[in-house]
Image (cartoon, rainbow, N blue to C red; front, side, top):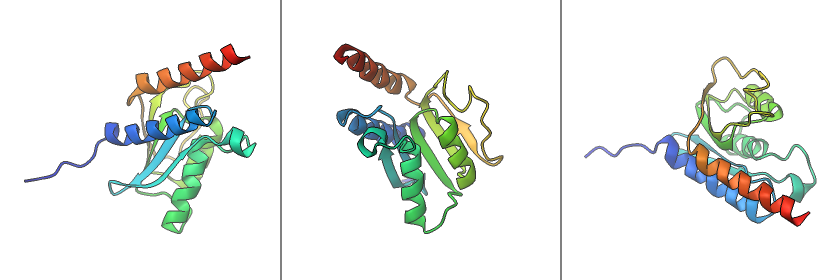
Amino acid sequence: MKIEPFDDTYFMKKALLEAEAGYEKGEVPIGAVIVVNQRVIARAHNLTETLNDVTAHAEMQAITAAANFLGGKYLIDCTLYVSVEPCQMCAGALYWSQISRIVYGARDEQRGCIALGTKLHPKTEITGGILAEEASQLLKKFFIEKRNLN
């Protein structure tokens, strides 16, 4: 009997669990996991409020963790699963990491790397819309609650 590999939806659910962990901490709920050979090697969520650091996005945290795990700065043969399309800063870091694939959930029509025309590494594939509705709903819930508290 052949066992089917995990698919994009499976790993995006892991990224959404990270987004929920960030939500619980009062962070903008974006989560990320990095996978190589069907194995999660890094998981992260936004920590910009916790660390008082505008660069502490989920993707940046995951890139650092994956590089540490692999013992090198390049993420060739790795896939990033992130609940929301990466911003320009994160896309730039992903460019330099030479990550092989990016899979995102919801689009960021205003600040996302696609909307801003940010270049990714020529060998990086990008796929979007995986569990987009779930990712979008979590973000909407977060910002509605934030507005109601202020």
